[in-house]
Length: 392
Image (cartoon, rainbow, N blue to C red; front, side, top):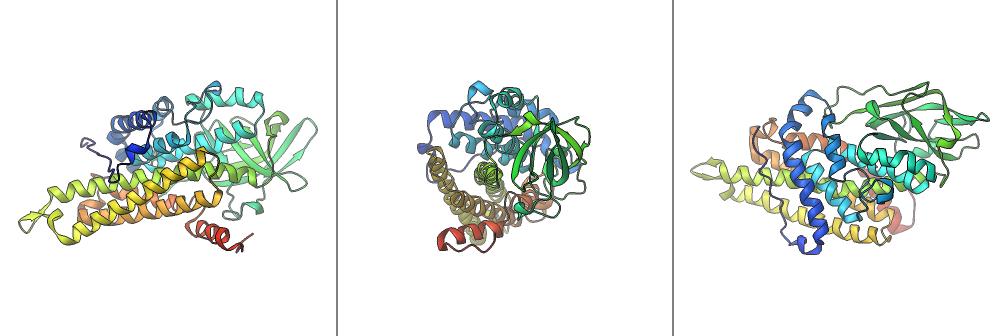
């Protein structure tokens, strides 16, 4: 395995906008990725396995619930710190970042925001330490972009709830200890339930034969008359707005994470172009390759500024869902375009596992679809600026 020589581009000196704590958090995550993820990730992606041995390290760098208060096991960091951690982890691999952002934004976040004090004390410290891994169940076989149409339901049986249904495309499902599930009660109102590994009727079959996110575990959640204790209902909020607020947090992390994947592709392509010689000179000295590289750093810089400003707004509790959608959509599209251009600079070598580019490109094909598809995020922006909804 070649050494990880990554150097992060900072063309507009964005480091001046970050506090010393931001930079310490980011640099700790960057060094951890270089040490623990880069040397193994290509092999795990080829084998379609999740490297479970890195879970403890993710916890140590604060990747699990970085903004969760320290009293519940979190790091008590701000939103920009969260974004920077996701950026560095996705620089290593989108699948590893998926594991971290699901744990933080889709499992810990709703328990912290909408759970009881008992639920917070029971689950959050173990999730923060990596002792527990979690997953989030919203998407169903028949309901992706239309989560309000979900068919999963639960009934009040007096001393417990009876849950039935299925969820699909669930990151972390095969090994999750807890699952935050969204289902409808008998009146059709959406609520969150904490389902725990070992509950009778709860199964998590793994999804195989993926060409994308191969180093991330994906699966289904099956609920066949699962008895859920009443104390596992999240009481703080109901309705579709509850899971969507969790998705806002996750999409915010993705907007930062995609920059990391783009930076890795750019850095790889720049380094290769300076070393690869054709017609008696480095290909970096040719106009067409300089055009590709110049456009890459321009788009990365624009995405960095977009994410930084969004981080400031989110820390001030001013960021709207539509603003988060714009950043997620823009930055993932930017990253996947850069991955494709970087692959061309490397020519045939770009498709091999000796370099990270093709893996990033395949991963980003999932990232551009999950947590709201590319098209849906465009329509969210359209609805926000025109006041007219094109979907319910």
